[in-house]
Length: 231
Image (cartoon, rainbow, N blue to C red; front, side, top):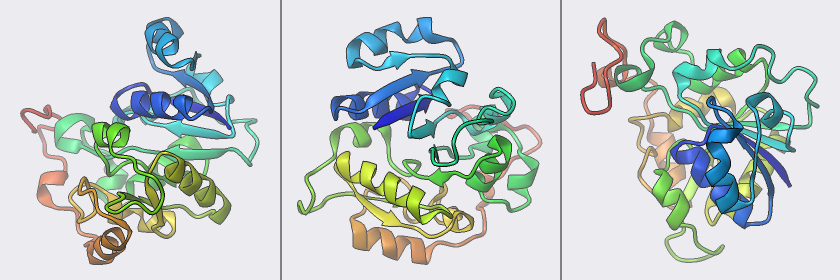
């Protein structure tokens, strides 16, 4: 499968390595340009490209950049890209740590619905609730005891099925987490976030989630700070 990855940080770099090793044709981009990704390209066999090229490089395009940087992507980045191309959002909103205040999310909009509106393109929410190192190291064969499950939320059943297949190839069980408006159930501070649960545990955690955003995950007048010193 042809896969474009926009963002080469912890999750983007991990997915580049894992998906390329699985034999997918990966094109990866970041905000600093292809030259800055020469080492990752040599290591993995992925192709270093511009952000605009990554958006047109795949059957699946994974957007994995800080939430607050989404509006800085090229305007109409997916204009002309076939509707069949699946767009995945891996992001989380960290208002006090990194992103500052995003008014619509603070008012109750789910994180990925906001991303979808910025991109002008339907998205599938996935890979946001697992640590990058666990995504790299903890995959297991299908049916293995203790196999970690990952929630996948989105409005298009076909798109979700494609992402769930990729999740399985990476060594995890994909759990259909409902439509995109239900993706708050896998946002930070929910029971499924960064907990490495199996399929049954993920389903239970999604059901137990509360839609109220906890105060420590809301922006303050001083936001953003840093991960060491949230503001």
